[in-house]
Image 1 (tube, helix red, strand yellow):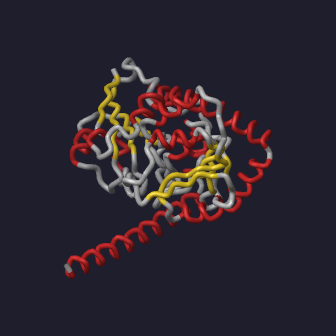
Image 2 (tube, rainbow, N blue to C red):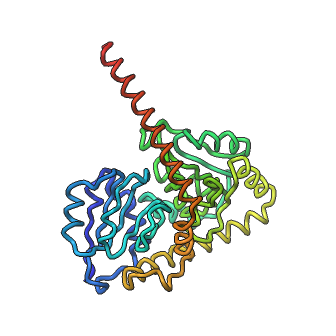
Image 3 (cartoon, rainbow, N blue to C red):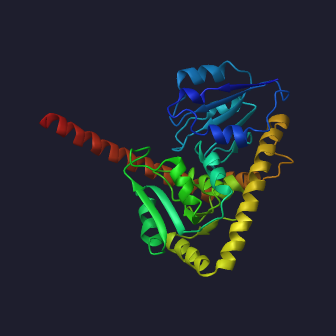
Length: 331
């Protein structure tokens, strides 16, 4: 009998992905599957918190769902003791054959918010929309995309800050929007924004990661808009804006693909749990992940990118500590 062990709720922001987990990713799991613990947990630190490490260590060959780990700093050696590991954020340098990357999903509320607008005719008031911090790669995105009008841009002061839009407000905007740019965050090219846009019928727009379509390792052969850089993305969006017929066909294709992708994903997760293999799975992402783990250039690009990003964030953190110290001394 499959036993679900939820440790992610001990983390800050518990329930953040609950709608995605229960309504999509894990929706086809049933109790009469293999006799094992299915442990769901969140960790973006190098080492597991003691309570999570103890629970995993006490279980014999558990199935793991590792949420978070955006920074890819986690020591995943214990994965070898698991029957299977599902994890967010693709990492080609995690080459264990029993590790599969799954999409980040969407924040709870997006499924319900999208459903509230689904019965109304799509207005397409905006060509593109973005809500979030204007930092790092997002500055380059804004510089190129802001030339395309009409658009909606709401830049916030920080993650989960007081000036951020509510989920309901974002859903309302996306329901009126053709495409949603999905730039990277502080360090990782993946983001919740991809599926949040898809839930609301908008087409995700992504920039290649060191020349790679990074989304295919999570979403398989997807119909997103993917450009070489943000200038290229903006040109592709502008062409779509000038051709309503082409946009309509693209939007219909994306909506149809996404419905099938979610159904296949839930079925594939259940199949892997049942059989301990990706053989027979419908999603093309599993083959792309195998190819990515064998791609030396991709592995080198990931290693270099995350090493440099960690160094930059460390320097920023030290500068902030020094500035805080000086202010404290002066007060």
